[in-house]
Image (tube, rainbow, N blue to C red):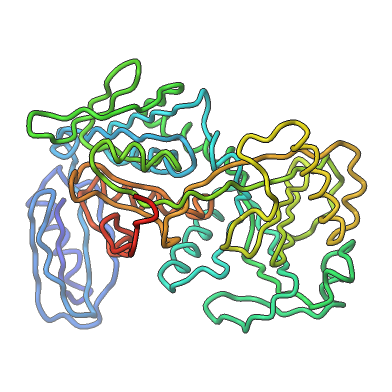
Length: 441
């Protein structure tokens, strides 16, 4: 890559470009001008192959960027990356890596993607009540990325019923009276809207399984290999105990870098290399899907105890919990419920949901109960980055994976493909201080 940074008056621009073209003859592919200076003071030209050392110049400046033929770059060996896990995080990372000169292999324990937390997620796209500021901003950035993925996400906004918090200038919202809330959402019960509501118009929901499949298709179109029914059971190492790949029950997959994006299975796998990944042993989410209904919910409905959202297929997703970031299930359901327990929980949940939105009684089919488990780091923050013991073992696990999927995929792929450590991900490193972990180990 040739980078020329020139502080030129406009009349000298064409002359400078001719000089660069002459110097590099047919190697120049394109030029782009970022900024034209009003006054010329000096000229600096630096060429450093694929890694130019460009000295920053004070503004105003004209930056001329010349992209050379990438023959040498393309001849460089590709970095091989094994991604363990085909949930939304693993799929997003694979998609982005596959477009950045990496040979990508995805290993998934199930026969198809999105079978764990991704497939059982609310996929509520939000940065609501997410602190500190860097975490709120990371979620907000990813929400903006979701808006660039047509057909995979919708943004009807969230009506947070009874929300009495002060307005956060970092996160736009609109306070509504009871009457305004009832007008915004026909069919909402007057009791549920008694405390008014706050509208978060920027929030939405994704079809997380559809997005996961779309990300994997794009990765495969870029040359990635996706292997299903391949459970990662161990790692391969060399004589110096350096990580060299992944072992499944069927074969070994050599890799320069291994990404652990396997959700709740991450700690057990990482422990095989002596690496601790502190996730809480949370009981799972309990979601209830109503039968198909005509379009009824204009917004996502959230209270301090419940979440209701109508999917594109007409079914309403209902979940009960004790606070947005507390134990996600207020319903006492074992990990493997019996059919009788499923029916009982579905009936009770639907009865509670009717107190918020009585129109749900139109559903003629029995509700479907979905029990899932999800990864939850002990400090509620994502765990992202290489490990100290094995720098080529990259951990990628978090709560809010549906919201964070797009931005995490981009940033992690940048770090791995370019050998970077991005400041944006510094708060989430695996080696940070998690406090007392004696209850886990």
